[in-house]
Length: 288
Image (cartoon, rainbow, N blue to C red; front, side, top):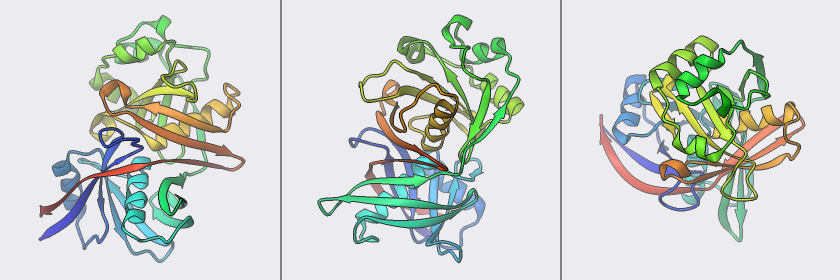
């Protein structure tokens, strides 16, 4: 059996930027092992498989090379942006996707009759206070205690997947960070998070709220180039704790590893949306 797969860079402003995801529209009756295999062959952090749904307009399942994940922001953007390019939608509209994190709305935005951006609604944020050993944290990131802004609350936050926000004091610290991924995985297991989202308020572009890197060895991906769910969660964390007050935000990620991406985040009363653009970079058939 062969399946047709698209490789799509989500949150990309250009062909060489963003976070690659696999997209399979007409998903046959594949096993979980086969769907994990597709992600492994494509060498992407997640692949989205689109199915019919009785609860929503579409059902989408997300598989990394090792596990199924409940929700994947960049793969959602890649999927619905590519569907728009392939004529699934006539213009700006709202559709729903059934995921393991619930039924969530997706907004497809057109400008001058062309797809401009896809914004996905994430789950309402969940915050959990945690006990965090700062020595264990900086040991896993291989930085100094003084590099971390310890004034921020020790919390993990989820809008679909739990992440630990960590603020470092400079872009230089973020850029030269070389984490110990074995230690990061152990720390994530200990605190109940899927990833560590490290960010600094020093940015490349003045419009951006922060620049980030996301480390997720729990999902078999040491560093995720551009991360939708984590950026949405961390923006909610910053707004809730009064650290920022702007509600329409742009997050930078991926530049440090040569995959520049921009994530648009809207934090509203009772909702959070993340989104961006996408670029189809490859189409191929995979034999199963």
